[in-house]
Image 1: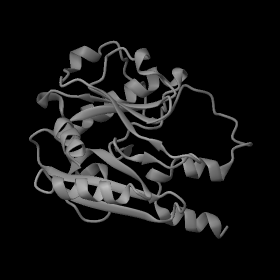
Image 2 (image 1 turned 180 degrees about the vertical axis):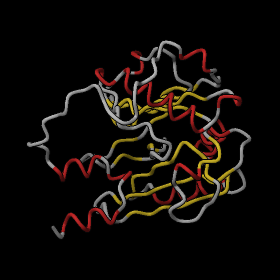
Image 3 (image 1 turned 135 degrees about the horizontal axis):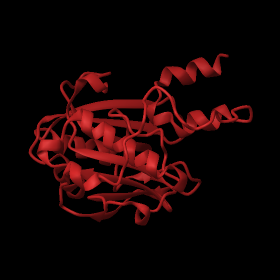
Image 4 (image 1 turned 90 degrees about the vertical axis):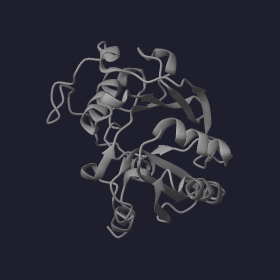
Length: 232
């Protein structure tokens, strides 16, 4: 539990707000629990919840802090502090990154997530979101998930378990560098042209397995979607 507390203290520092956690049962994706804890006052309780639920649930956290802690508060307009940019590298190895991240998490074997802690002057929701998107788009051809960059995304909590495998795999904290970054250090990451359209051609979706797609993104989908899908 001390390792969890140290991790959150590293990424959120002395700021204040509500930490968003989510838990999805390993055998029932509709068993979704959303919980909020005041940071830093309730950090111990948050760590206790993670330790408890990770025995049977996949555990996730949002890398931003929110203004309120009521169910459904994980919305971009409620973000009070955005201390980091992040990337769901997936199959993109961290060695491919142009700026070495502050934190690297191995979410499953050879699958990674990266966090870049920002200088306090840069820690605005707008900048964090834009930078996360720039990183995702530049590395998308190397395996990075280009759809994961919004302020309300969920990432796996280190020191927990990834249950999507027949033999569950540990979520590991691979590297930590207690260093913050300024905007100038990301000049090699170009701005993405438009939020409204993409220069990429429309993909062929005729052979998409919808159940697999829902399962892959279940951490970011309202559980109600699964109920509606099963009743189609």
